[in-house]
Image (cartoon, rainbow, N blue to C red; front, side):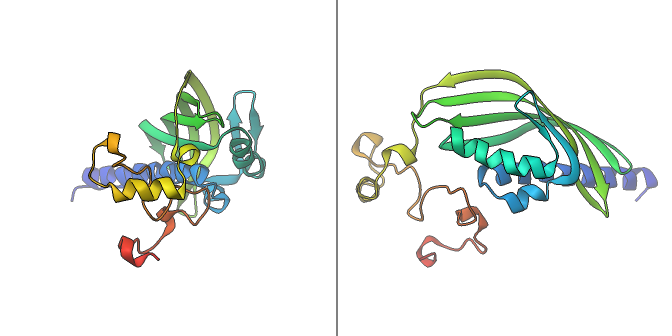
Length: 200
């Protein structure tokens, strides 16, 4: 492999590590996993969300999940388009994001914007050193969620009619193993995932 190809390969791997870091961030906030969230940012980082929040990692850990729990019953964070520029032990990223935030009445705040970020590699590990959240679009929509409308009895009825059309209740909003959770009991943490019949 030529030196140019080796350099390109190394750059791709570095960008992939940073991309995976951002995906772990989404899981950390959506599963309310502070241990994982802590490993996304350096302790001396600066995180800024307009006039809502500005602080370091400890401040953010104390703010982020309580903020979501106070205002919303469900949420999803998505990272979409991204541009990452790597320069030695420093990298800069522009990550477009889409966020769904569901209020107690079922309405959904749909927000999109960008994370403008500086990353730093220490001891071979990339983490976020500076984040500036730039909101750009926001709207409210009506919505519903399994958490609001489903009961164990209604779920059982849906699964009895599996394969039936929607009008007959043939679809269930989450699998028999249960809904999404805001802790490490969420199915995403199970290793191995295993078959449904083996999960107990």
